Image 1: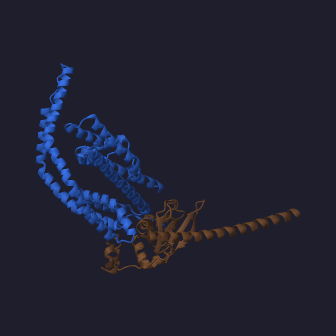
Image 2: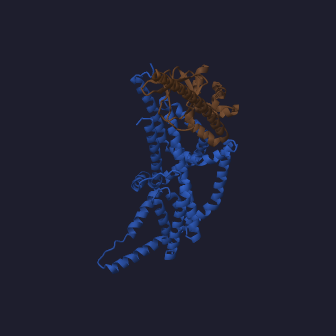
Image 3: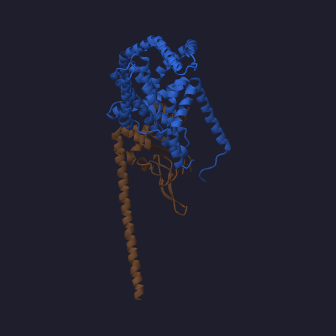
Length: 355
Length: 192
């Protein structure tokens, strides 16, 4: 007689055991959230570096040696980039910080002028004076920032440990990634082995394509925007480029944030806000979007994860509510990853008649 | 701890770098007998070995079912696997009995087409699974080995095609002869 029915106690013990293991794993991940973040970041880095490692391995090089050479090259590249890019970026930041009081008084002046204009047009209309209110708010925010300095220091410490941990995990993911998937398969029951092999492969492949595509696209936007704004002589072009590259992770809103940040820089720079500079900024913005839409995006993002605008708005709102600015930035990539995973799961579970 | 217990502990692939502690099976020797790995050197077989999933099946346990998407090929390390196919009337037709050093399910390495038959262990069996994702990964990382496997597989399929063509020809001949005999019998009856 084939396929003997197992007693219910067998399933209870199995369920209990795996549940216990999962509970411990979840507990560890929650108590050391930096481990989870490090694992996630390492997976992203491994996805990015894997094609280069495979390319050189195909040409007969040793995989571990290739990974080490790539690490050395990245370290050298970061060092060079740091020495060339960080000083001007710091200068821009310092400049911005030094000009901040004058920007404040400028905004106050603009508001006062606006108030005067409104009062001349509508004499009876009492325009509220927001300046003292905003100043008070700023003071409270600054106090809150000062109070969070100890927490910030511990954040820096965990960031330092993450910086050490991520290259190590990435190294092992690149060198022995197949061992991890083989290890996962050892706990899968025989009945679901074939399905799990295909599912894991499809999900990892889809995620690789998505992560690589999005990051390369964001880097392209960062480079194009920075070069474009540098050519037209926009101040703080490095910061605007960085903001545009990061905002590109959010569909629909990314380009709007990018354009708004450039216009904001025009507004706060004395003598820069005129029709000509506005046209120049718009032209650069349109050119970057056209190059991205016609050349970069179709070639780099293999599989488009289409999300409805409503999902994007809700995702950004929920992300912002949970994790602030970082939450807003990573909400859409996380939703897209979940969508890809669910799509693949649904297709395969259907073909195996499980759902 | 005896040798068997030690070996069981080493079954998890993450322990494979320390495999020397638990002894080593002659997996390359087994792989050398499989037509898909024909002409492979020992170090090339070691690369393939790293990609294999070892699976243990109890007597009567299903390896895969007809109609499900195929994930790869299986090599029998020990035990026996029966390949069956459901007929139109619901009865099961036994197509083959795959024994030690045999292999089955190799078509799934080429395409994710639904399995054309079911496979079931008829004794306690140990199988090595070589999955399609593993072959794809091998093709990316070591295209020379990937091409070797693919050309070996196409050779296996070509041989089978020639064999099935011959069988079909023989069947047609037999049917033609039977048809001729029936006609002559028919004409004889009408003459009479």
